[in-house]
Structures are given as C-alpha cells and as structure tokens.
Figure 1 (cartoon, helix red, strand yellow):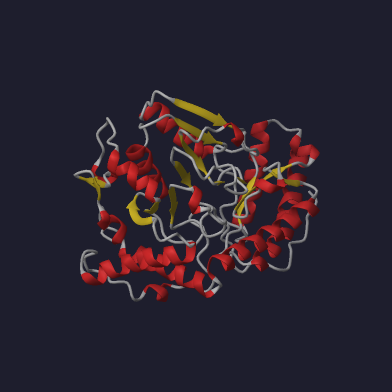
Figure 2 (cartoon, one colour):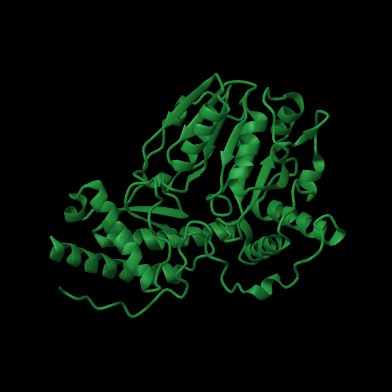
Amino acid sequence: MTTFPKPDVRPANPNFSSGPCAKRPGWSLEALSGAPLGRSHRARVGKARLERAIELTREVLQVPAGWRIGIVPASDTGAVEMALWSLLGQRGVDMVAWESFGSGWVTDVVKQLKLPDVRRFEADYGTLPDLSQLDFSRDVVFTWNGTTSGVRVPNADFIPADRQGLTICDATSAAFAQRLDFAKLDVVTFSWQKVLGGEAAHGMLILSPRAVERLESYTPSWPLPKIFRMTKGGKLIEGIFKGETINTPSMLAVEDYIDALEWAQSVGGLNGLIARADANFAALDAYVERSGWLANLAVDPATRSNTSVCLTIVDPQIAALDKDAQGAFAKAIASVLDKEGVAFDIGAYRDAPAGLRIWTGATVETADIEALGPWLDWAFATQKAAARAAA
C-alpha cells in the first residue's frame, strides 16, 4: 500500500470537540484555586460567585438590563425544557428544526406536551426552513445555530419587533460567538460547555420582560417538576435570577465558568470572541475550498456556522459509496487522527450525514486550525489508499 509522509506541524491543542469544547488558551487547574469548595452555595461566598457568574454573563453577552439571567439545572437541555414546559400552551406554537437538537424540541412538544396547535417547519441537514412562513402571533421555538448541521440563522431579521407570541431560542452553540439580537428574543438558553469551554451540567436561561409577563399571567394545565418551577403564587421567583439556584450547583464548575468569562473580557469581550471564531472559521473554510475532497454541509454561505463546522466528503470515489460505507470512511479518518493525537472528537454527530464536524469557537487557536488542514489531507489520502487496496 502506498505510504504518505505525515505533516511536520501538529496542532498544539488537538481538542476540536463540539461539546464539551476546548478550554480557553492557557487554562490550567490553577485557575480554579479560588473556588469555595466544601461551602454551601447558599453561603455568602457561594452566592457571591453565582452572582458574579450572572453579572459577567450580562456584561460579555451584552444582555439588556431588563432581561433576567438564571443558572439552571441540566445544561442547555434543562434550560430549554424549563422554557417549553413553563411557557407553551397559552397559544399555538410554530416549531422550527433543521438538525437533531431542534428536532428533539419538536418531539418534546408534539409527543410529550402533546399541544393541540403545533405547526412544524423542518428542513434537511444543510439548509434552513422557509422562515418567512412563520406566524409570530404564535409562539416560535428555534435553534439559532444548528450544532449538528453547521447551519445557523444569519440574523434575527425574520422576527418582527411587534410580535404577539414569544420567541424561544436555543442558542447553545451560538452564544459568545454570534451576535444574538435580544430585542427579538424572549427566551435564550445555552450551556457552559459550548463556546467558552466550561464544564457540563449547568444551563443558562435568559428571559425577556415579555417572557416574565407570560410566566406570571399563565399557568400550564400540566404539572411541573420542581426543577422547572419559576413562579410562586403567580410571581416570578426572583432569587433564581440572583444566584439562588433551584438545586445545588458545582462551585468548581461555577469558578471555571467565571474564569472563562474573565478570559473573554481579556480578549475584547463579545466583539473579540466573535472575531476569534470568525478567524477560525475563515481558516478552516479556506482549507476546505483548497482540499478538493471536502465541502460544507451548509449549502448557503450566509448560513454557515462559525463554531460547529460540519463537512461532507465530496471526493467522487467516496461519494459514490453507499451511506454506510461513507460513514465508515469518515469514521476512519476521525479515528486515525485521534490515534495520532492530532484531532479529537471530529466525527459527525450520530444523527447527521456522514462526514466531519470541527469546532472553531473562540477558545480554539487559529494556528491549530491551520495546522490541522495538512493532517486532514494525510488522513484522507491514507484511508482512501487503504479502501482502494481492500476493494
């Protein structure tokens, strides 16, 4: 079998996972030395760190003063579920999905909540549904950035300012890398382990004044689990949005999130984070254009994610294979790079089309993206030669 020389330069950090994502440059366990371990999160020191995490979130994400920010259980999934179970049902809802996580929210609303008035707007991986068909007199649920498809909404222009319903946005792979238009968003959710590379199990829930009004004026017909309850006696439980978490948080993870937010401030805040992600995507996209064997899964360049970049293999010999063989080939590329210690966790999501998924968020260094390209070519060439020899 033909052998191919390995590239000379390796990425300094081979972590390209789409969640949990790479830690910020220069991170070490020393960054967490100030965590109030062994103390109650309700003690003054614990609550102060939780409040600090909320304050920094507002500053870095540029969240308007009237929007509440809460730390909630169960990562982004928990935050989205809290919103769906607590807010929906007052009026009809339009569900928008173009990848696996958005499809999961559709399933929850249709099969779990079993709402009677649901319209579904769905598209295959790689494209957006027709957003002009949405009715904003109804509630609308959508993901800002499709983590498993690499397709994002380019902006919030499709949402009218005078909407009657609520907009519920899962922004977990967009926050801190794409500019969210909070004036158009009533609920925004994300998790710490995505763009800033924090630790898992904690979600963030951001509510507009309109969302709070819904919570205080509408009671769902179904029972709510304790971890979903945001009101008491018809009034918002304000403590949730001041660091009084519903259940016990990890103060170690809280400290790690604070560290990531302080790093974000050091690189220019939101503008700096977006610029870093954009530079990373540009470097990867330039390589893809040169490669001749890869292409973006996202068809329209205007909708291509600058964080979770999903790629398909378009080499004619590989594209002619059946889906299972294409999937096996893509997994072989990811596996050989993993074994080399060059790139970890770059396989496509299990429900997505066969290919690769490479994280280019702000905690990744552009030099590592540039070093990865030749290794992708090497892995492709070696696996293609192996496939040819086995045929």
